Length: 313
Image (cartoon, rainbow, N blue to C red; front, side, top):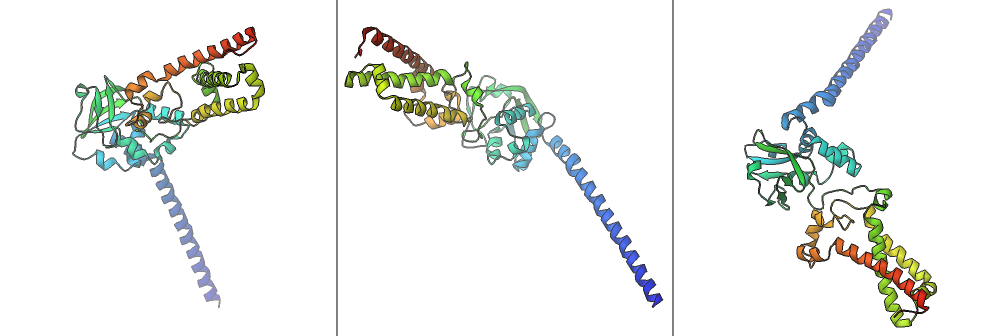
């Protein structure tokens, strides 16, 4: 019995030592793996593809599984957003780098930056340039591409001709919402206050004139008799202008002064009555002038009617 007990104790001690060694070995392998994942692997991958100052773009290419498409024998031209350009996107959209790289439209965004063949800076001409996105082309004007400046041109990286640009270029319908605070939208020097007041003035002046002709009531008489309706109209039209502003994005900007620069709005306008020629006439500046005229008109109408004591129309 004593012999049997000794053997059992020996086996238990041996098993304990083996278990302890296995756990220590596992922890060591885990620590080594964590060090590889958190340091060496990402640095090596980023450096191998596009080099310094383009690390986020390199990571995005890997995330979208486009590395093979860019590193083959086929010559391609890449308009490459710098790390600073991606940092600006993160700030504008209030997203982390990981969230930007996790966008469902990431592959569409990246292929929008790639042109088939070798296109040097000397080859660039004003006009549209087809991309690997296939659906949408880039607009080249002088040394800008979609409004982005080329900050460094004609780098050769393997089969790629790389032009570094200072913006991430979003194809239509690909950009997530751009975060705008109420302070930004309603800032006194911003676009919203005058635009909204102008729209309300145009609506109010037209309504007042039509109602005066129909009822013979002056503006102040109409306001007193229909204050509830008037207040509801003001709230509705103000909300109709403000709601898109607070959920605005690169495509569907609510700012009328930047709509014509929006690639998404231009796609929306295609084939409709609001083509480029029509938008030259019916534009934000025209609306602004009409709004100012309507505001002056309402003030003048109230002043004249107060002086005469009756409706003008």
